[in-house]
Image (cartoon, rainbow, N blue to C red; front, side, top):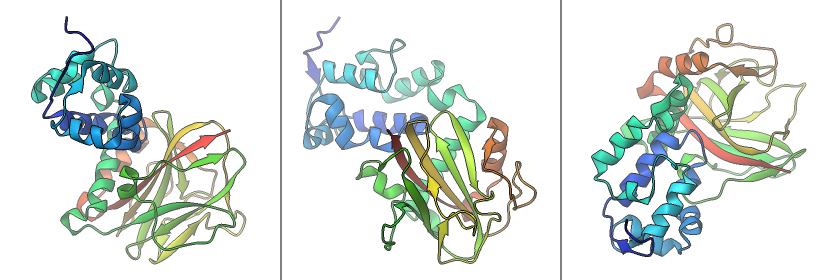
Length: 283
């Protein structure tokens, strides 16, 4: 067995980490797959991590072992897993039913929403653009947002229990908007439409949620952990499996696996704009 203090260059290490992001991204913040967090995990600086990802600098087997532990891939895999050819690496994950390979449909749906958010951030296919931002009550509104593109460079904002926040959304135009709050790998709740914003119809420009005369803010409540907001804009009304048409005036609904999967599959992918924002709830 190779010694953990041995090392070698792995030309496709970055591709392998990016692939893990694709199948595990619905379960953990996207920053977990980026330079700053990986530098902590590998006990290296960000420049070293970048060179190691690109095969320009050797990676110690102990660093690969740290990645295995961080991504919770043991006991199925050890550090030698990262030494496999890329296709064998992917096949091994599939056989082990890791991440989205394990199902259920809501895991696939979350991953699909993240892919749409990434495509929108890069303006792939001339998609309409959407931005999303959490703002504490009293904080001045400012242009722009913390959309998906920023997740690669900035840490997830953290909010303590009891903090009051609002959600700012900048829209590509008139259409219909759905806001989902996802406790990563636990449950997904629909904030819009609900009594906080009773209809999905929007006029364009910017929108601040809650959009109700009875509710002026969201209060951060337990549990603690990692969360992700999704804003989903479509030019036409989409039937929501958990609401009547595009309206809902009751409390935010916790979506079943089937409801989330059906909704994401129904989206007109080439005309849908998605923004995603990771955040943390702390005590």
